[in-house]
Image 1 (tube, rainbow, N blue to C red):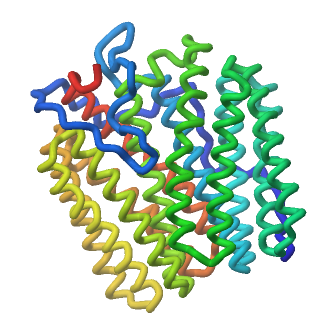
Image 2: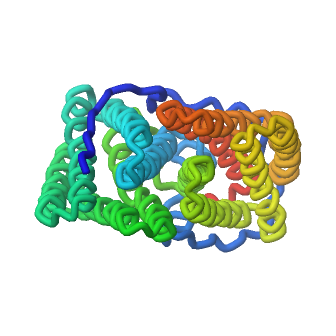
Length: 427
């Protein structure tokens, strides 16, 4: 099977660390009464979403906050790395499934993500580092494609060579980051080797036709990405404290990163589920939907760790309901049933109001402002489904990037409002 891979440096969404996102809701939320702390749940990656061992949530100049440039750096890197993982899996899945247009659409979106990662590196380390990093990062994607080609053709020699090339890449990247920020070369290489191996697990499961295993492996691989992003963000913030004031590994920063990466994962798993359904790939739909529900449970546990068990129990069915309405919309799009689509949209709008009321009660964020942000989430996800239904995977994957790029507009203010309401949990 010939799987051509071309790199096109197109970017619909550029991440810069020079300006913090405007937390337009957080200003309404001053410190409020606190409730007893709930134990932080353990997610699939083994990390506790609400804590970071040995880290303080209080900056050197003020109270706990997630709205620092160091926290933004960490959250931004981790969300890009999670997106990288899911786009890579979509590209290899399309290739191995013989869906060439889907492969190309995912590959272009993946390269746009690579450009954004390189720009993030450039914002920290300068233009020369950005120019050096991009071809290095792209190279490992090319080697993953080589491995996929070898697996597809049952060419053991080609697959083995790709693995050897990937191991060398991890050493080269370790050297790059050692020179850039002093992280030990071998330690970085080891973390990247785990990334490569967990992505290999995804490809192997896809090649064997085990879609359930592929999505389980994808969640494991995505859960590992913070093991790369966290130390990189921490080392960068410490090397350039003037650019990135605050602490990247504070408890407040951990909350912000955890929420945003989970929301980005939600977007990509939702798109995978609707794509499988509209493509008539029932096994893929079911596997992606099951992975999506695992993500929903993780988000609800993060909510519960902040607001308590009652809030967790109330949030999970509420969050699940909007996924069900998206499925209803997808079914309507597949059947060209305008009435069903309109009903689903109406239900989604009501969901945004209910969710706005939930967060208003939980942390004081204005109900209508939260509802508006969630409405944008719903509409950007609708754009993905519409493109999938139209048979335009290129548009669908770029719409997915736009939708994923919006998720921090939900996660950022939610994290900051949580920190302000429960400051004692973040010190």
